[in-house]
Image (cartoon, rainbow, N blue to C red; front, side, top):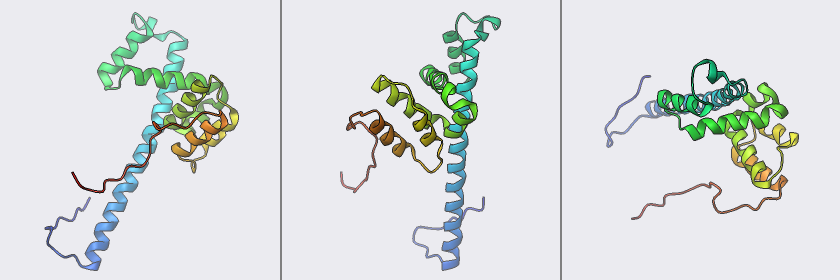
Length: 169
């Protein structure tokens, strides 16, 4: 990437400022696209782990248990065992409703929110909410709000929000 380095007191021409703005925007697009790819990759990992668990594949690998296999993944790939269990649980709950393509389409972040809301309400995930989650125009925040409304859950203060730094101490 052609990064433009300037001193803080240096004034840029309009052309230089536009070039810098273009570089910023291109990098932001690359990051967004990478995050989306990663979110879908974790959904795919959950699908594979769910199958691995269901067929007890760890036995053929001489692992003591599925938990032992997840511990080995944790050690080799730096993901917490609880995260790996979450991906597995999400796939287990949503594959019958959404299928592999549907789960991949929504990504793991939306899938986790659906499963959490349903668990909190002691209900099953609905096909209607799965369809909402698969809509690329629906944000995770919006999906969470819709799931809370669908399950008549109370919105609480622990819901992530937007934080602003107004300076100061």
